[in-house]
Image 1 (cartoon, helix red, strand yellow):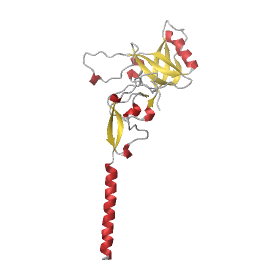
Image 2 (image 1 turned 90 degrees about the vertical axis):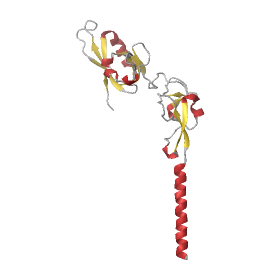
Image 3 (image 1 turned 60 degrees about the horizontal axis):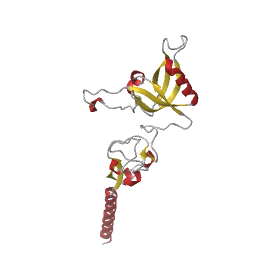
Image 4 (image 1 turned 180 degrees about the vertical axis):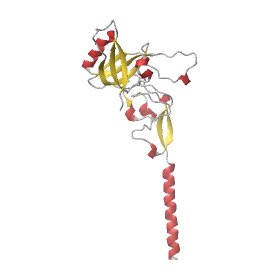
Length: 215
């Protein structure tokens, strides 16, 4: 009889453990995600957001669980459809540039005019680090002037099209066959006070080339 009671107790305990594990695995909490691709320069509206149900242990730290907590705030960088919205990725004021990359304290944002072929074939992105190289243009610069490295490892804060608007890195698959894609017009980099003067001095007499700096 004692052995039967022991087996019964073990069975009940196993059942309780299984029930607790099932209950824990079945729990879901609401988490806020982007309902569409969202830019950094526009305040979020409730209609920009939607909720999904996820297990509590699948949520990263700072995940927003209430759409009203994100409404009216600005993404620090673009948020793409279905991406989780994190509190640390939101700000109370819009970013200076659409890409959401901020200019570090003590630095200046300078637009470097550059052709697509001299900007990594158009592959340069905000957040990249690049070397800014000035190549003298014959007839517009001193005859003895050599190619110069003006800035090493400058932070790219934005990329602009030839008409001044933010440059769209759109895939060819998403464009009509007759569409003409705008070319890169300038790359905005964050540089120190002395570097901004060097770049300004070379704009009229140089062609700029950007070289990607690895991690």
